[in-house]
Image 1: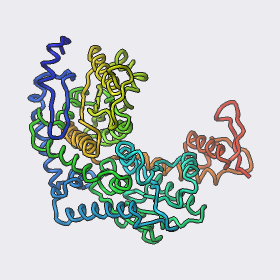
Image 2: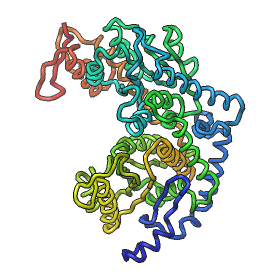
Image 3: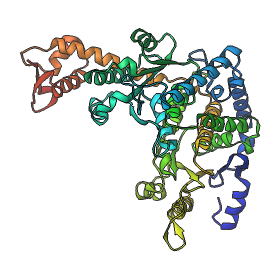
Image 4: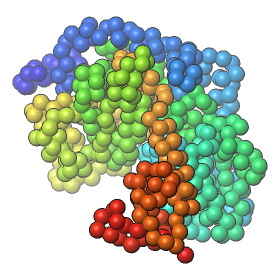
Length: 525
């Protein structure tokens, strides 16, 4: 790509796409793709459009699990393939918005008669990360309800959260989100939260709301315990694309977010990227740039740099959406392909004081995705020096970094929105969801299952089963990891790590030797 200002300007005009009616644009002019890209990938592009049409029409888009994929229906129920599904989506949305309104207005109150003033979301992965992004990006400075998230099974983190909320549990509404109800991290978080309520003499059920699959373990538990409310999750919505279901709409509405506009933003981007040709289709352009940068094999990482503090979690959100969807060992034909795109990032201009040094001068193994927001602030401008505001500096740092990267032959994409609000965030999420779908078609992988995650869960379950056996094998007599492993016909390294964990948490005693093989362990008395 030529470095002259004139050629940059010419290339910019050719590869700058603007949706003026949506307040959105995408600039791919600093990606060094050849002009024959669209022709060369034409068959794949045509197939990707056909796959998307079939998916939105209700075809089985997740063949490994025999499921439809319907997150696009959540913001446009008219697309759903049956009247029952359309009605269920609409009814659930209406129910979540009414519930949130009743809580905010004090029609639904805490058992002590006071208004709920805090919501605690218990979930993991897409069941927490999406609502976290919306809470951070869109909620007003003083939302109707404060919000906290319990998104891990780390007991220290749980203790800190419980201590921070303190007596506030009396007026805290807890959302427990799990499609299957069997996710151990969420189950643990629910039990820990229930314990915190009970410690203050509170009836957890009167504070609890379930978002889960119908007839799941969690659903049955909530019915049995008489929880305050239950809302459905569907097997045709994956966790990482569930933000526009009850998973995200309840917490957002409780926070005062305009959920209707949020959904409308995603629907508007869906519509734009459903029918336009590749050169004018923002989602397809994004997918094609990913394909170009990594040669269709994910050979380069995606560094996401949003120049807006309220989008600091967007990089993390995209990390799950992209890597969970595209990181696959096999393609749809069963070939080993080890596909995927690594995603990381934080925010601008903070990163200019962190890893931009390496991005510019180090290994060229990435492409950057800048996200700029036109409106700098909602309050009157303030000049930090004559003629310049903080927002001017932020824009200067974005443009300066982009130019510095280009001078070192580092590629970048720039996405722009006029302002950050519910509509524009919905647009961005819709854009990346569709880009993921298009890219998956281009490289022929199933974007809607996650066998690697399931493998990790199975390994963790086996590890915990072994822990019970190790505890049973401990005695008052000293034993090494090798000795216990021999008794149990187990991997001695697994046994060693279990023994050190048990020792650190008071369930065993250890006497350190000169090496792990010489460490000796006894049952704690």
